[in-house]
Image 1 (tube, rainbow, N blue to C red):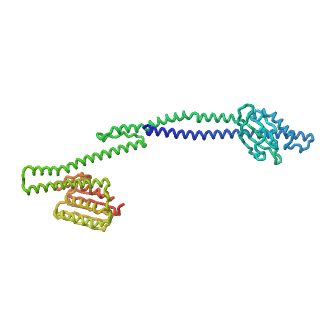
Image 2 (image 1 turned 90 degrees about the horizontal axis):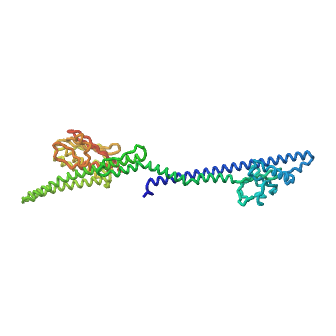
Image 3 (image 1 turned 90 degrees about the vertical axis):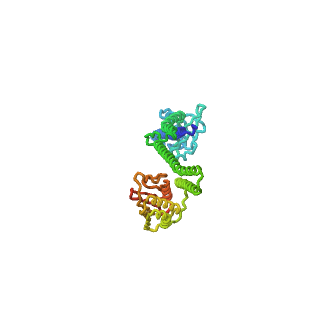
Length: 493
């Protein structure tokens, strides 16, 4: 379990990334240091080689001038395969090999054939000649090599060599090779490797401790949140977790969780209210049914009386059925389980059909209807659901409009959609009830109104309109009337 925790993952990633970064930086530093050591060694070998050649040439020139003064011919002073030059070179090496600037260096001089003339130290026989012909070596940059020598000791040593040919009349007159042990360079590189990589386990350990500390500090608010969350149950759902003022992801997580708690709390409250309202709505017809049955069982009655009791019972059963069916439809809309049967609808014809169906109720109550058709409107939608929504709005208008008043229906195109207005001149809705009329089972109190619904119709209307990507608004004033405005898009997306 601990290996799957965020804390372990943070520590592991912290160790892995920092170790990788240390290795990359260490390798780069090591190679950079190694490159600089070799460059310094090569510069030293090159400068010493140039010094050797200049010194030998100066020594040779001095001898040549003295010989010329003694009357010796000029041709005898060519360095190429000259026995005199060989003696001078040997003499120079013997005298100058102890020069402090040439300490820890082996000086070798080769003739034009690549055969060793002189060496300042004993070297193996195989190094008495050049590995490559002098003609192939660049006289300006020379040639660097790494070789292994076995000198006086049994243990071989690695040396760095620099070979440079000296030309005379475009021919190789002689070649100088300098060697210096690489032990000092190897010692410095070994020391650097020990520093960089020898302490790596200690560094990883320290990184792990630092990562554990950082993970603990970083995750402490989450641990506190976990404690607070475990404390919250259905009995104290109104409690909230403490939000750290850190302006980071943890603060946003805490705020999001509190927001979720608010939504859950509101949902549970609504659910409890729904159950209470449903129980209340069903309790009334069930009480009537029970009373009717008890009355019927107390004593024998006439057939006409039994028939009346059965009709009352059947009517209450129908009320319960309508409540349950309406709630099922409403729940399906709210859960997006209703698949709209979208077709092209002539909205004007649909409104006329709905008005024709509601007309008997209007006639029975003495209410006038007026239909204002400004535009011919066609839209995409579910004709059956839209017709049900219109009938609910019209039935609501008839229910709360007194006799002799008028219900006006108007349709037009507006802002790329269709707008329907259903206006009555009835008793209106008070300002306190207006924000709640689309809630389930909410019924505003109206003085003198005996005919009241279940408080589900307007909730269904709003769900149908929202399913069609539209919206519904209501305006009302007491004793002046109410206007429902429905806006629908012409095309479903």
